Length: 357
Ligand SMILES: Nc1ncnc2c1ncn2[C@@H]1O[C@H](COP(=O)(O)OP(=O)(O)OP(=O)(O)O)[C@@H](O)[C@H]1O
Ligand SMILES: [Mg+2]
Image: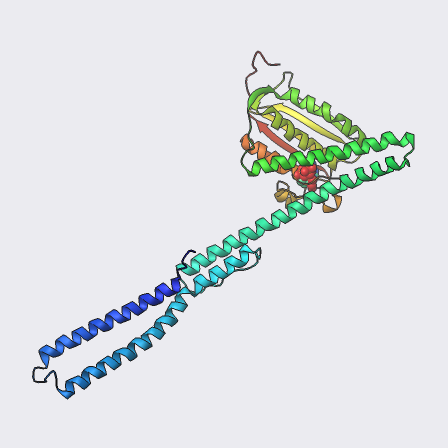
């Protein structure tokens, strides 16, 4: 068993040791001084003996009183440490609202403040973890409930043949939604552990944008949103970046734009070549207010909470921002409430390489 050493006992015993040593020195000094200065007082006289006895008694009283005082002081000095220990134990049990109160106006009070800051950081982390679990469970539950409902209806034979295709389409959409969420969560996990990396190469950005739009087209058709690709250049633009990650950025931005657009409206994807390659995604949706603008890049932020069924989990833009940060590419948003928004990012232009399309 590890022997437990207490700071209190150390401080207390130090005080006692100081008191004992000081009394010993006092007694020796007294004895020596008496020998020299009181020549006419015989050392064995009754006077001298009673004097020595009284001195001894005074010493014992003084040691006893000092010991009590030392005990009190030791308790006082070590009280903040006991308070820190008490609160640390409570925090370890998950009570993140606990705080220490130390008013010693010294380094220990400073330590108390640092400890409270740490407790606050732990509390917000814990809240984030709870929100995370709640958000993800909620977003997985809706598609799972709907798929389960359809599968049950199929097994019961209550779905007429002509409706089957329609329900299978919904089930496919719901599975895609779950797959997107799981992939986003894997990206978030990689970002958290610092394993999210980019592999930049020179590639044809114009071609990539064309492919993304073509790939997403079936999804826009069902929402009746027109996606126009606008390129002012006659030639394709080549950039130096990670094509898979830039694909992910464009997909996320277009999906957001389509998601907020009304039926029969349009979304424009613009590719320009200035000093840098510029990609803009413009929609004519509800726009983003100034207050919301601060939060849209935060993980799990959704401007309109009531629209949860329609919209996603609120991870998309946080991943977009992280990918562009890794490319050291800025992204900015222009938006007017009621008129729409434009998300624009830039990438470094690369010279076209002969062996690339
Ligand atoms: N083009 C836009 N117009 C208006 N609001 C937008 C636009 N793009 C994003 N937002 C707001 O920002 C929020 C966060 O967007 P983000 O892409 O991170 O999450 P999401 O689309 O809700 O879910 P996910 O992308 O994870 O499926 C959205 O919920 C929406 O409120
Ligand atoms: Mg999104």
